[in-house]
Image (cartoon, rainbow, N blue to C red):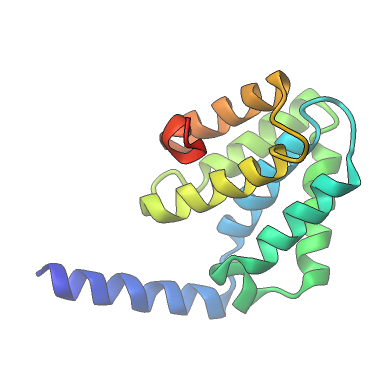
Length: 145
C-alpha cells in the first residue's frame, strides 16, 4: 500500500502545481513576510532571498510567474505592518498545517532563509518559533542547531 500511496501523493503534487496551489503560495509568502518585518524594517536583501526561494520551490515554480510571486509577497508584507495583518499571515501559514511534512518544512525553510540574511536576530527567531509552532515542524533540526 505504501507504493500506491507514494504514487498518489506524487500525482497529487503535480496536479496541484499545475492547478495553482494558492494555500501553499499564501503560506510561503506570509511566512517570509513575518520574518521580513520581524524587526519592523524592510530589507531589500530579505525580499530578494524570499523571491528566489519562492521561485525555486517546485510547487510554486510551475504554477506562478515571478510577477505573481512578487505581488503576493508584497501583499503579505503590507499585511505584516499591523497586528491584525500579522495574525492573518499566521493564519495563512496555518492553512497548510494538515499538509505533508515536506511541504510544511519547505515553507519554514523559505522563512528561515530570509531570516538568515546577516544572521538570525532575536526578533526573527521569535517569528520563526511562531511559524514552526503553527506548522508543527522541528525548528532546531531544520536550522541545524
